[in-house]
Image (cartoon, rainbow, N blue to C red):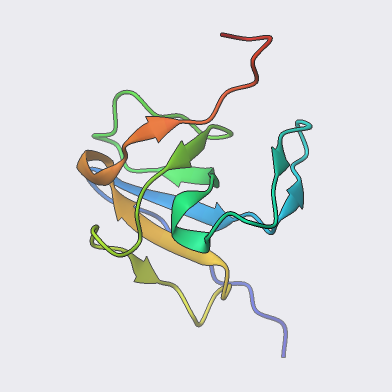
Length: 96
């Protein structure tokens, strides 16, 4: 049976996709020495009340300190995180 479920974040929650070590689609290299909780997560969708973060951004947050809910039944590499728990955006140096 095909899984057609989609998680829709509410309020200030952000749906993110865990990025494996290596190179992201935009060319950002994530070194092997980086732990899962310290690297960028791709923003898949945002709740209506999220103001500063947009779909397609890469955000940084610490899984150990924030309220992140792993969305096991939809995709094991997706998480919900509150906007207030985001500590930064991951940008290409050329953009900064």
